[in-house]
Every structure is written in structure tokens, then in C-alpha cells.
Image 1 (cartoon, helix red, strand yellow):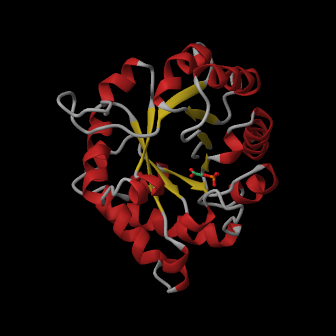
Image 2 (cartoon, protein in one colour):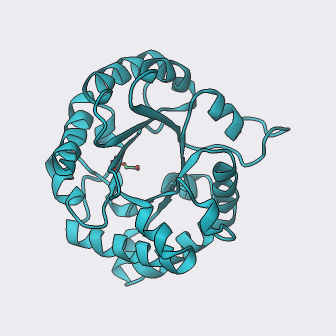
Length: 255
Ligand code: PGA
């Protein structure tokens, strides 16, 4: 059985103090339960205060990006080791906003996935098609390229902790959600790709999250799908009331 992972992607929102308040409100609801995994991904500047807030609880911490080199002349960048030092256990990689606004390629994302696995940081590798690609029937092809490219040269034995997030770009921050059936179809396809590229065992244990306007109103239906193992939540993760409601929906389904 795969445990649900509910992850909050705060993007470029909330300063360290605002983040600490949100962490406290989430930890008070989700900090002691053990039936679902919860992970918060603040901006870099919020990691230290968030780490203090989640200490001793079951809520874990993730970053939204990092640079694949361990150190060096990369002005403005942050390494995996620095994130581990701030108690991060997860890192979001290949988010569509990074692909689009920062020109990240599958090859560069692949370097980061490799480094994260070597550094005991669990990668949340994001994949997903644009509206144009969906409408022209290219969804499976786009997702296949991103999964294969992101995981190139990674062996089944190295993939412990890998998480995939299917985020249709047209559903991110738009209020448009993929129907549970639409999402399930792509999730099943991703699991099939993992089975081909890594192994059936890896495919069965790897969590595939859905992301794109997930909110309390649609979380339960999405999470009830066979191959949807959690959510990567943007907008609705910025308010404790909506994020906690999604966590509670997952807890209910898990019990
Ligand atoms: P959203 O963002 O929930 O605001 O659509 C999801 C994401 O980009 O991870």
C-alpha cells in the first residue's frame, strides 16, 4: 500500500514569519497523525523557520529547487547539502514554471534528480502537458519524454524515495482541474512507464501525485483514484484551512 503524500508548494509566497504561522497551523492538525505523509515546501528563505516549526512532528520539509553541483561559483544557487542541513527531506524538481520561465530542460532536471537521490533528498519530479499539447493528442508522448528524460540513467536500485507529480500545465493556478478520470488515465500511464524504465516493483511503490488546482472541493474524488497517491498543492496550500481540509480528506480515505 502506498501512503498518501500531501505536499504544499508555496512557490514565491510568504516571508519567514508568515510561513512560520502557517506551519504552526498545519502542524497542529497534521503533526501527530501517521496515516498520511505531509510535506511543506516554502521558499528558501522560509526553510529555517519552517524547520523549527515542524521539529518533532510528522510534517516534513521540502525545497522547490536546487543546483546539482555540491558547491562552487553558481551565484544565486543553493545545493542539496545546504537543503539537507536545513532538514529538507524532499525537493520539487522540473516544475512547469521552472521549465517555462527558467528554460529548464529534461537533461538538466535529470542531473538534479540524480544528485537528489545521491543526497538522500527525495525528488518530486513534475511532468505534464500544456493545453495545446493535450488538444493535439500529445499528452502521453509529452509525459513519456519528461519521465524518461528526467529519470535517464537512473537504476531501479537508486530510485528509493522517488516521487512523481503529474501536473497538467493548463490546470495549474487556473481553477481548472483535470477530471478524476482524466488524471487517473495519465497516472496509470506514468506507472506503466516506471515499470518499463525501472521495474514493476518500483512502479508499484512510487507515489504519483496529482497537481493542478487541487482544493478541498475536489481532493477526495481525485485521491480516490487508484493511481493517485497524493497531491502537490499550490494555491490551496497557502491557507491552513484549505490545506488542512485536503489532508483530512486523505486521512479519511486512508482509514
Ligand atoms: P495550484 O498549483 O494548486 O495552484 O494549481 C499546483 C502546482 O503548481 O504545484
